[in-house]
Length: 255
Image (cartoon, rainbow, N blue to C red; front, top):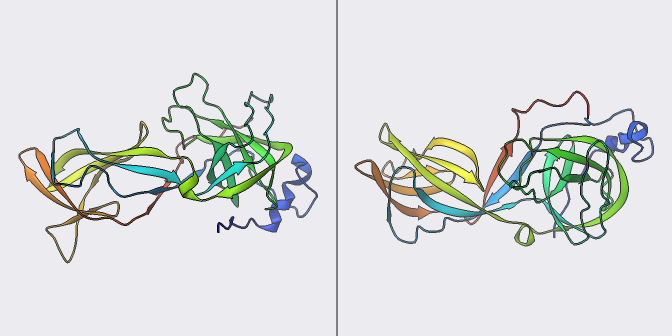
C-alpha cells in the first residue's frame, strides 16, 4: 500500500492569491522553484561475469524509476497562460518532483522535442484531487525525469488521481561510464538518459576489505589492466535511492 506524504495543513493557504482552495492560513508556497526528484535504481545489468572496460566505455546499465508516481483518473486540461501546456490524458503516469512542503507530479518529458515544456500538477490538501498546476522550464536538461524549474503556479480544473507502486511507474535506463584511473581508484560517471548526473566519482575502497570498493552502493572488485579495468560484481542491494536536486538554475522574476 502506498501512502502519499502528508502536506502541512498550512498549504491550504495556497489561497486567495491563487484561488486554489479556501483560506486556511496566511502561509503560501513559491510560484517558482527548483525541485528534487527521488529515483530508485535497480541492480547492475551486464556484470553477470567479470568484464574488461576501457576508458569512456559503459561499464554497466541500471533500470531507474521515480520513487513517487501517480496515474491520472481524469484528463488534465491544456493551459494557455503564461505559456502553452498540453493536455495530460486520463491514464497518464506522472512522476513526483519534491517542492516546498509537497510534490508536483509531471508527465514524462520528451527532451528531444523542440518544446520540452509540460504541465506539473499538485494536490494541496491531500484529497486525491489535483487542484493546482505549474509549467516546467527545461533548458539543456536531457532526461525525461528532470526539469530545471517549475513555475507559473496557478489553479486548475480539479483532476482526480491515484498513487501507483514504483514497479508500475515510468522507467528509463541509467548507464555507468568508466572515466579514468586516478590514484589507483576507478572513477565513474552516471547518466540518466543523456544527462550526466554524477561526474568522475571514485569507487571507494571498503575499510574492512580494501581489495573491494563501493560505487553508489554497488560493491565491486576493480583490477587495473593498463588504462582499462576488469570489473567483478560482488554485491548490490535490490533497490537503491538516488536523489537529484536542481540547484543551479535561476528562478524567473516573472512567469
